[in-house]
Length: 267
Image (tube, rainbow, N blue to C red; front, top):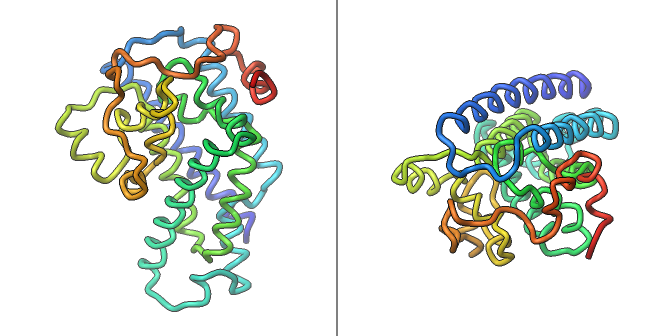
């Protein structure tokens, strides 16, 4: 049963990933927000290559993934939502909300703990900001994130359908809010009341560390407002701001092999 759930989740996530990736890439060509600093060839090869590698690693290390873990916990009556009675829709919505908060908290911790920042900074070392940046994470970070997510799923007793929905939402919103796309100012202002927009998240990829340590949300924008980590705009403006880190700016650092060793380099 767990294997069937895992296979179904993988197929759904892959379909959503490919569809949204293609749509966002087309949007970026038609209405880019910023001029590119680097050519797409090496960056996209590395960023998408790391995404494929992460998928293989997760499949090997965690064959049942988070959704399979939810089924396992449900069959054993483990977790908060498996011990209390509430309508299924309420349980699903509550679980998605808690999982979103958990990922926000994880993101903050990966910025604050130096050892974890070494893993996460590969995501921030991208000198451009586009939809492929949204899938650029070190395999060690992805593995730790899955362990953490599975622990939250078990403790919460999240329904499998909620976990699958959240995984798809997280994947889709990460590619959307990393998009190098231009939204009308009014639309952006309205959307960011509920969800993280590209302009909102771009601030998080600023070279200025105080801006890097803001706007941690991937999906709902409420957490940054609630925990006072929200910053509306970058000080240098979206067209003028520098994306990335002060280090790893050499063109060679954009290759896949160099991405993999970044956690072990420098201070």
